[in-house]
Image: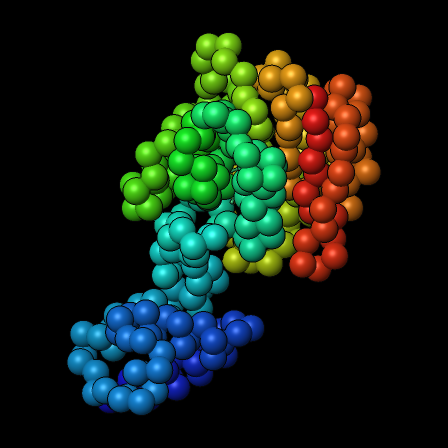
Length: 283
Ligand SMILES: C[S@@+](CC[C@H](N)C(=O)[O-])C[C@H]1O[C@@H](n2cnc3c(N)ncnc32)[C@H](O)[C@@H]1O
């Protein structure tokens, strides 16, 4: 059998399993299993061994059961970083790259970052935001916290894989693991923000595979914003900023939470789809 025959049968298998982008997913997984570059695969269409065919079938069966493509491949690209992902950690989303970029711009203040800026990434998950900031600002001291040990194992591995040393990952709820009274220049967070009752209606790749504690924002989706803004002032230096990713339709409510917690100069950036996605506020 040749590689493109395996691709054809993989596509048919995924179509029968009801996978929406059957061809695209089959292509990625088949070529990933073969360690083949896409162009070379089409040009050379090599003969494949029995072992490789079994490997391709194993990956395709996982996808047919609804496992996210990114978990099967094992990594995603996040602003040029290789971020490893798998069961137990949220897959970083493209809109979160906007949050990380805005965090880097905010701390750089038009190209002149403060000396050794301190940045805290609450709900760090895979560490994608903390790592992107730490890489862009090598003089920064970056911290990431998360309740999930499974997520933190990925975050620490991601620091290693990307050779980033100016980041420290700590386990615990929100600010709890932060010791000492040194203040931060910037707090950034993409917290769980989905309304609990909406979770059963999400696509199966999310609700059956990604960790519930990475999704569930409580009865109105705002639980974590209330907790973060209630404690943020005690951890920010005067004039320090906070940046949060927002769920759909949450910007007015989170603005109000920020105002009531003593923050000002509040602005909101939209994502690629024109949805209010990033809230920025100053102490
Ligand atoms: C939406 S995910 C964001 C992950 C990552 N920052 C990203 O943008 O891809 C939210 C993360 O919050 C973590 N989390 C849930 N409750 C938490 C808490 N009380 N304190 C800290 N992290 C928490 C989850 O484990 C999950 O990793």
